[in-house]
Every structure is written in structure tokens, then in C-alpha cells.
Image 1 (cartoon, rainbow, N blue to C red):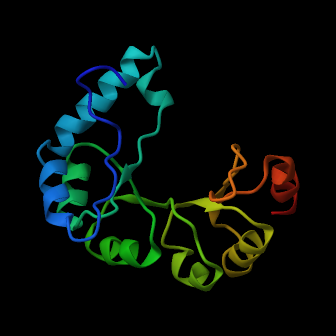
Image 2 (tube, rainbow, N blue to C red):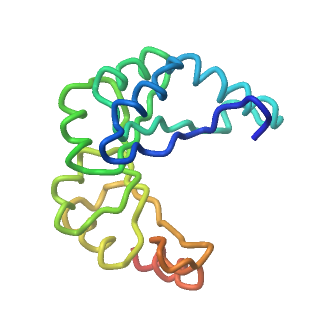
Image 3 (cartoon, rainbow, N blue to C red):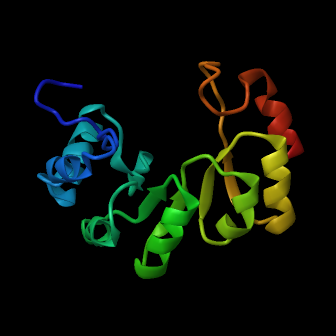
Length: 165
């Protein structure tokens, strides 16, 4: 990150401090923030069409989701199924991605609601998704750092999961 730049994401608010964080996060409009991100992409020498921007909606309401769509973003990402379902009902015109861990007991709620589930980290979950909706698009989450506190399949097992899924 260069001096004076905002981070690409803001950490979630600590409990009891949501109003403070929300005010700080909203001091810059979605359109302004998107312009900054696109400028940073351009500085890397990448073509803008080579980069897919997913606007993460965690902690933001439908009004901010609509603002993101108005700014030209089309893909909205949510990390919790329940929070996403509420937003999906009231925010039209977005392509929704599930970016957080999906529990197998939420598979039926998630399939068909998300264009892409980005967090498949086990054969068990892949099989559950395939049983409910074999056409559901997914990404395999790989724990490349092999940190035990992070989710994702071990890199050595990733190809096996892809083959089986």
C-alpha cells in the first residue's frame, strides 16, 4: 500500500463500536472508493477487465449494496448465508457470491441463491452441494499457507478434491 491510500478492506467493527466504524467506513462514498481501487489496478499495469472486483457487503445494509450497484459494481459478496438472503431479497440486479465458510446444514439455503460459492474446502461439502444442485458454480478454497486456524483444503490434496468434486 502506498502512503495516503486507504486499505482495500476495512476490518469489521468490534462489538459495541459498530456505529463508530460505520461512520468511518462511510466517510468515503462507494464510487470514490471504487475509483481509488481502479486507479490502483491501473498502476499495476493490469488491464481493468483482467480484475474482478467483488464488493464485500458484510456489515452493510441494502442501501450501501444499491450504492455499489449504482457505482457500476455488479458482483456483491457476503460471508454469511443468512445475512445474504435478506439482502438478496431486497437488492435486485446484483450477482451474489458467497465468500465465507459454508456449513453443510446451510447448503439448501445457499444453492440457487449465489452465482458462485467461493469457499468449498472439503469433499464432504462439495458432495452436499452436488446432491442439492449439480450445476452450482464453486471455487475450491486452498489453504496455501497451511495455517491450522484458516480454512481450506491442504494444497497437496487440492487436485484430489477437484477431481472428486
